[in-house]
Length: 497
Image 1 (cartoon, rainbow, N blue to C red):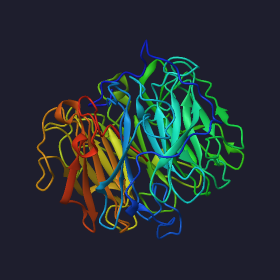
Image 2 (image 1 turned 90 degrees about the horizontal axis):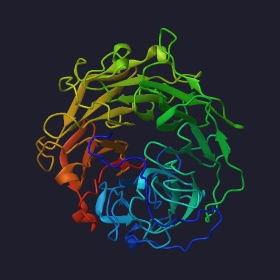
Image 3 (image 1 turned 180 degrees about the vertical axis):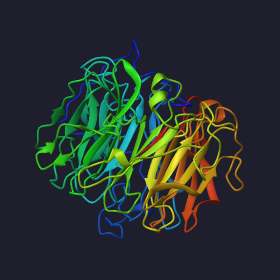
Image 4 (image 1 turned 30 degrees about the horizontal axis):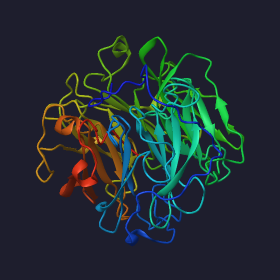
């Protein structure tokens, strides 16, 4: 279980059901952002619309989830908070909070819905504004208990408002749960598609573009897995450089829960192909992990996979180098997809990496990839929430040979300039997100600590610069800033991607 989280995937009972229909029109309007957020759709320096710019002002925004939060007295109803980017970075003064009680958002806040159990961002309706895609993995529907739903809150010139239901799962599917939601153009038609997990081992593809009522002109597709696998995390990116989004996943093999494999589905103009397993130098399935991120670490034009493996102490450790205390694996992308034979493995005993590999540290509990220092190589942020002192985050520089410990940095609540003080159980680093919120070409670091203050949770933001992440000017926020209920919220459980 993720450090700092105490919410089970399934529950044996719950409340009334919510009818799921992808063609239901929903009223617009949610917690309105300040008028100063209004802007025409803007683009990043590459000329592409930012996938996480909800108000079109040219600055990336940050979505942070609290699916365990109490909303209107309903424990575990959940919410997603959004901070908007600006020339000076992320600003708490322009925050919005969305739950199923927000105007225009489908459904209503009910105990255990876990709205925010997964979060993704993309311009689903192609209007020039990124949209917020949210899973509610515990939602009861007409399909059954804990079927789960995936919903969207629409972006616009004044920020996010209004929404629609995109799809729902079957009873006990946990549709839209953590790690089971990504967005990318998997058929190359120029419109983002939503991909999630059904039956624990099949991919459900909702093909875009999407209308404002959540419906699409195309039928969705179920990409089945013949084995009794369990997908742990999904990631989307162009892994072979053909201009079409591919989907990667970490999984275990049913009853062999501790065996972690990495697979990917190649995107084509006819949709996703059957998956390919990433193999090591012995031609066996590469031992992967639980967490995935995508980015071009070695600057060769192909997106790479970074896999975090925090699990340890199982039989598969025998086949898992550097398993002690957790590890990451970098798998380079090529014209033929990810190449596991060239994987680079790192843990806290690797040269230059701060800290010492100790059981339970959880190195690799979260990973994020983006260019921090503006040198053109994507860098890697790694969460280590189980380390003594309440957790930490390690940043690794990207190079032509992959991530390196040379020049690596570590940050925690006891780092000079970082607000707060580390305490056992804070789980600082349970979630990490690199986001360029001021459009200076250098990603800033957001860190979630869902165990902070007896599991109320909190989020920290540290700035990126030419020398990497710096604690100078860092800040934190929690329920007091958002005006939400603190008790058991576990704010910082996950970020939008």
